[in-house]
Image 1 (cartoon, one colour):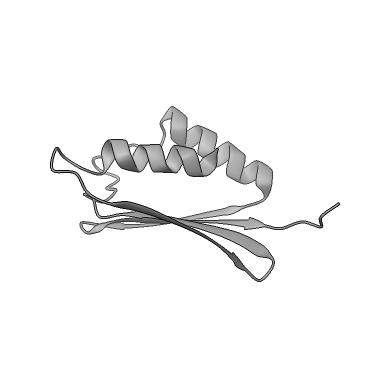
Image 2 (tube, rainbow, N blue to C red):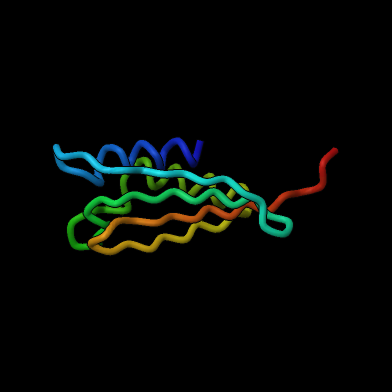
Length: 91
């Protein structure tokens, strides 16, 4: 659900009519699952974009519930998001 929300947000907000590229990578690192999502859009500026929308609130709650970590890096060259979810024991 988190990855879906982040992908939809990138597709909706990162580009003008000319479009752009959104990519996603899923990997394991140590005892974690790492989901990386990036785009080559406008970037995410606190002065122009609110991170307090409904989608961001849902993402924040889900990240917290999973005990995960969400890292965001953004510039005029695009946005890179890394979601790190600890793997628990498999039962």
